Length: 322
Image 1 (cartoon, rainbow, N blue to C red):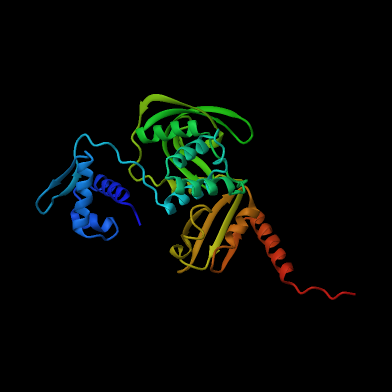
Image 2: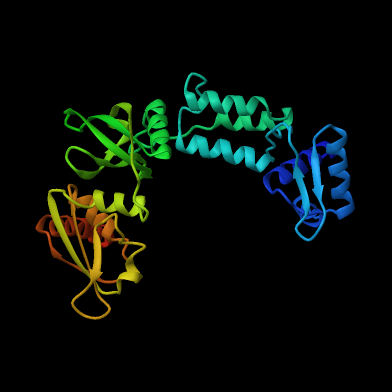
């Protein structure tokens, strides 16, 4: 059960986050207490010098007046442990005080109440996360500059090193940052060449903010555009006839694998895409829960047959011992 002080701070947080909140709604936010009790917590805040104003009438309620200081952070045990678990799951240097994420997490732990902080710190120190070898975490400072540029619609110069080790630099309009498949991507409109590009941020070596600004497209869907980009322009062609309507298979064979369009007969779909890894692509196709047939891409057909052979061999009866 929360102490009166904790309840008063929760009331402050509710009023600050929802200006005009009424006494009955505040009572609900505080755990279903009475309206009289909710008003008592408002009185406690006022006695502490916090300017809580009240407005009468049908659209009235409580709001924080001028000169109020920000409310302190309040975490429940579940929130605090959930935050640490999420950080550990996504960033495996969270226990290193020299790492930016580890340093920030340490500051949060230090301001928690002693009993809660001890539990959180125990999880942080004893958890043994297994690094995701497929993940690629970019430099926080470079990512911060790109986030700033996206938020302010500011043109940047992006210096980039390709997988082959080739360096390039180009002015670009940063449209969005998308995290996909354990990697961070910058979706942008490159000025040279004049085309939309997706850069892996862990391969960006430098970001220079330029004086120009731009107007982003109003109908931008960053995730869909990135998926289409990742599914096109690769070495090997793929074409699959799926025996279901596009809406039925979009969740399992969406834009990450290519483009879906109605098939040659009602209730069928054609998936077309490209890949640099036929074996990986064939494994993704096995998640489609309806019948399908690979009608284009000999490399993909060969990869699918290798997977099918391994599965069949895995289910074959064991030969008798001589």
